[in-house]
Length: 199
Image 1 (cartoon, rainbow, N blue to C red):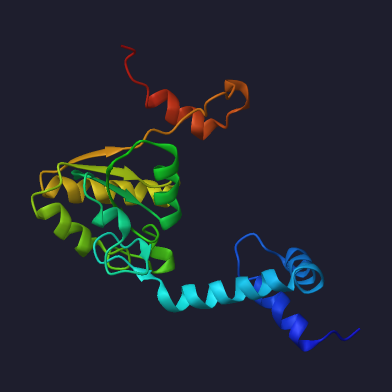
Image 2 (spheres, one colour; image 1 turned 120 degrees about the horizontal axis):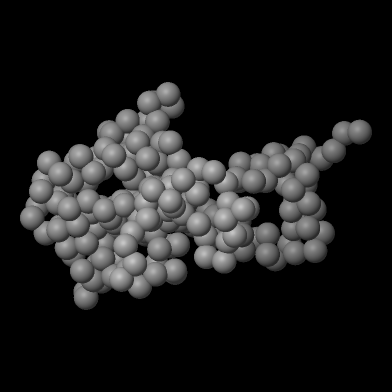
């Protein structure tokens, strides 16, 4: 059966989003066209406006429509603390879940030589400038607990050491409310060997 070319184009376009396969894209397209055309118009306008107007912060590389993002521009944040994360979504996660009041540096990925992602692609020269300007005392490394995330963390720790900046890594381990028998071996190993003294 031949479907509308516009409909097929919409379904294929929706598949660019992570976690959206053909069936999900089809459901979204049909929902927008059958039940929420006004929502579809708003979504379309918001996407177009965002793609046109949102860039990267000149200091931390966070997504923003200004030269400097709201976090970097805010007064009262601790400029001696710098948290390196892999993505803008990680900044939102840290801001929502913690009381962290320092600044950020968004890598926009992790080291992955097989994919052609090296230090230059992650903006390491900009990070090195920030570490070398004398304001940062601690680099908090909040990369994901993956092989690539760990390699990136080691690189960042070495970079911080070259500038006499203390480097720390966020803890990884057993989730709150988790039971040991159900935790995977890698997570349990990280938690076990990353243990600390109880005060």
